[in-house]
Structure formats: structure tokens, C-alpha cells
Length: 486
Ligand SMILES: [Zn+2]
Image 1 (tube, protein in one colour):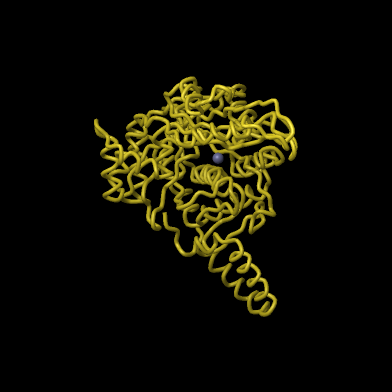
Image 2 (cartoon, rainbow, N blue to C red):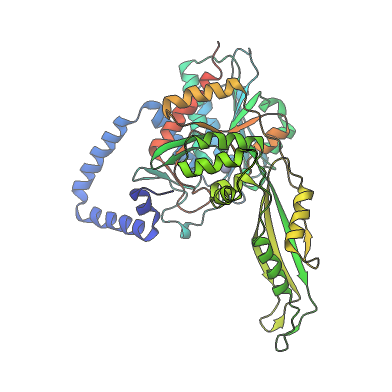
């Protein structure tokens, strides 16, 4: 999708660096003027933020600036910081708890008490982030930076924006004296990026009662912008299952001065080449069909016609091929398997005795892991390529999007993005949601964060300033709508 000029500009690291350098030089030349000017700008800026916006921004900044990289950072500190804010806002000790199952690992669970007329809602966001190497970034990843309409920092879009929005909204409800008709639970978790072992899984195992809810709102469903305009509002209701397979070819090896036709690297490479030409059968689940029905209403005429063909009883092969060529639609339509790691040989002057590859598969819910393995082995087309599976995957069922939740989402979304359809989606990645779903808590990925790009896990992660405030307000109204006495 085309990027706006400003996005394109900031995307280029040298340009960004130049902008930063030029800014520094200017500051030295006209420091006096700038001090006054920036003071005025700060004043003007402060005036434009409402008190709830300022609070959300302060919390967002505090979270970004605590390094919570899953392996090396400290989610305990972040959980403590959020707990301190909630307690200062009037939440009692029994309604804010921080659990630290290991050093530097923290989970916060807080509760806004309601009348108890209905089962609680769980608001879930993870505190940990994937690592960020400052050398790879144009800006310090652990410093909250506002520039050219964006907030930058590791976790800006995954998932500290949501953690900040939920926490700020919790404080706002408390200050207003809002009395919901059901408890609203906030859980900020550790370790989502590395499997959730000491995060949501730990909470489910040890404090299930504290997070038990009718359903949960979680990350994983944004508002997609196309050409700067809201295109669709995603609600993630299903996740693919991730399985890694390890491929290996062994060979007796020998001296590289005497090569033979049998060679472990060639043999593995040929299998992988056959895999590259293989496409898993198109298998749109009910979620995917519902998704495409909505998308057909807003797509370009050509793509809409292709989608209608897909959904018909007799799909046209050329239409399917065009949809599979679209990266975003490809992952929705079927299981995919792609090599992600490769290694082989032991010396530059020796014939390889082993060649190995990791193939990462994303399996559509409902398909069996065993069937996918069988198809993978067949696609590799060589029984000397061994295929093993080092770890057991976690499959999870889709969550049913019920009418009352959908109704509240439609009503609230219309206030922010009129005309953009609500689209139920399946993500090709995985989140904490799969554990909640398996524990019987239907989970919906729905952030209300409008975005035109995907920088989560990448460099210069950022969110639009406007989108951050908008999503915070959206979640504020949506959660209220879902918990107001009728
Ligand atoms: Zn995330």
C-alpha cells in the first residue's frame, strides 16, 4: 500500500539522521530563539492535550522508558510503576496486585469493582518487548520520542500503547467514580514475546480466579489505514498455530577437492526449492470467509470480484492465484511453511556431512499438525531429508464474535471511523490470546489503533500520535459501553 510522503521520509534512516543532525546544528546557531520558541510550542502543545490525554501520554512514556525486553529487561519494574499509579489514583491494596514469579518478571492484576450483575471483562496487554539494538535504530529505542506526528520507542505499537491506554482509562474511570455493572479486570503481563510461560500462563495456573472473565480484549486487531483513511476495523478472533520443523540431510562427507554428486547441501537445497513451488491447499475457515465477505465490500472492483469467486461454490483458479499473490491475503487463505534458518558443513574445504534447515509453519485453525507434516514431507520430495518437530505447538479455537460485543464495537467504531467495516480476522502470528482461549475465556484482539504500517519487532517502532490518543479514547468508550448498567 502506498505510503504517505511523510512516512516515506521518516522511513529512510539517513534522511532521519540528517534531520536530527540539522536540528542539532540549528539549535546551536539560534539557541536563544529556540528556547523561547520551544517554550511557546510546549505551552501550545500542552494546551492541546486534555487531562486524560496527558495522563495517557505520561504513562506511555514511563512504560517505553523502562526496558522490558523479555530476556534482559525488567517487567517487574514496569508492573510496579503501573501499580503505584493505580494506588495513587485510589485503587485499594486488594484491587492492585503485582506478582513476580521470577527476578525481573512482573505481572500486574487490577480490578475496578462493579455491581456484579454480569461476569467480568478482562483487559489484557503485555509489558515485555522484543529486544532492540540501539545501533540498529535511528533513535534511542528506550527513550520516548515524539517527532513529526509519531511517538517512537520499543513497544510503541506492541504492546505498550495498549498497556498505557488501559491503565490510563482505569485511572480515568476511578476518578469519575464510574460504577460498572461488572468488574473490569486489567492484566499487564510478562513474557508474551517468549511464550507467556511466566506471564499469562503463570496467571492462569496460579491465579485463574483473579483474571476469570466472560471475555478478554487483547492486542492483535488494529484499524487499517489505506491512503490515510480508515479502511477496516479488525477484530482478531483466531490465531494460526505456529510449528517449527527441523530438516536434516546427512552425508559421509570427504575432501572438497574430490566432490561427488551426492552432497548434503545440494540435497537439502533441492528439497527446499521443491517446497518453494508448493502451495498448501486453500482452506478458508469460517472466520476467513466472514473476513473476506466484509473486505469484498471495500476492495477495488478487480479484487472484490476475485474474493466473490473465492467465496463461491466454484472458485476460479486465476482469481485464487491473484489473491495468493497478495501477501496480506495469502496468509489468511491457507497454511504456509517457509524456511527461516539454514546451516550446513563444518569447514570451507570439506564436503558437508550435514545440512539443516528450520521450516516455520503457520497452520490454519482446524487443520491437523500431523496432516501438515505429511504434506510438508511430500513437498520436500526426498525421504533422505529427515523432518523432526522439536517442540509441541499450542493450538487454539477461534472465539465466537457474539452479537452484544459486535454491536458495542460497531456503535463505538462508527463514532471514530464511520463507514469502515468491522472485520473479524485471523492472525498469522500468536499472542497471549491462545492461552486464554484454551482456558475458556474467549479473546478478541482489538486495539482501535489506526495504522498504515507494521513496525512491531522492527526498527524505529512507532505509532501515530493522533492514533494513540484516538485508540485510548476508543477503548475508554468501548469498555464503558460493555459494562454500563442497562
Ligand atoms: Zn505483542
